[in-house]
Image: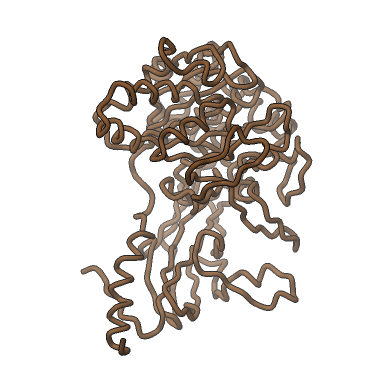
Length: 491
């Protein structure tokens, strides 16, 4: 192929490749959410529910279903969900002073349901329908094209029963359409129904660290979600601040703040082990829920078939969204782990929780609110090797008039482009761009040389100087093409 034809061919190829990488910013619609919780098996589900409720204006909560798990095999505790929602009802009017959209407690109470009180696949099959499984079917049948996110904090058998029944009673095309509506994020496998669903329904979108803990702690030690605060219990090494996921911090920042804070129990094992499932969906400018490999407060996952491990229920039979590592530098030390995909954001999401608890008891003028980063260009751009690139967030504002600090950085793992430099220095700079103005609203860099189309993810992190300091983000996906390639832009 001669050079003009080669360039024309690459240009056409770009039109095919880059749309696959494009996701148009943050979805302005609320996410539809169903929670399955084995609440009261230990304190962490109640902790997570308290946090969820102060973010509940960001979601359309379709159901909160009390379930069993390997820790609580034949009983459920919907009464505890009801207690916490009633406490939320006392502070909901004050939350509305800070942001709109917080649902009435009565609305949430109507959506509290009960699963079948038996363990795992014992609760799946003929005669095992429950209020919870029937409610999931009702939600899926609603004429709403938005995905339904099922966040599984305990056993998944209530969802499994709903899918068992739908598969048995619906035409294949209709059932496949309902499966395509579902997005499942489970906190490991706390019964044996999750592996069954993944095997039976290969089209089911599923985020999970496979396996469960029972008599085998290593299963949880390798789970991504323990990055919320697992080093406190499992004693693994991180670069994260463990003091902000411990009881003294909780007492000051959460429990001391009003009637909802009073419902937050002390930490016994891991603080809020279930919280990553909805941190993943929080609208903070960082996450793209349809792309778990992009990373967010709820972690980062890649699509592959995990190899079998002794703590798995059974071998995985198809690709799922599962554990992947991030590399994070703290005080000159490099930490590489699945958990790092969550704990790297810990100061930001803990401060954010503390601020929202302030919202439950304070007037607007007395509380802090997050900055609003704004780019003067799209979140995805295409440039040529050697081209000067300008990233501009000078339109960023803060609702409280606080001073802002800026940090632009290359989020190495989500992109296809990898920077290599002189490893002898053993420095984080080996993996960062040469960027001018990285701590200002406007940053510039020169697009590196590539031999084929590559993409890199650059994150803008904006933090205010309020108390507590709050952080929001913008992600810029930079698609880089070789010199001489014609870039065809939309008119």
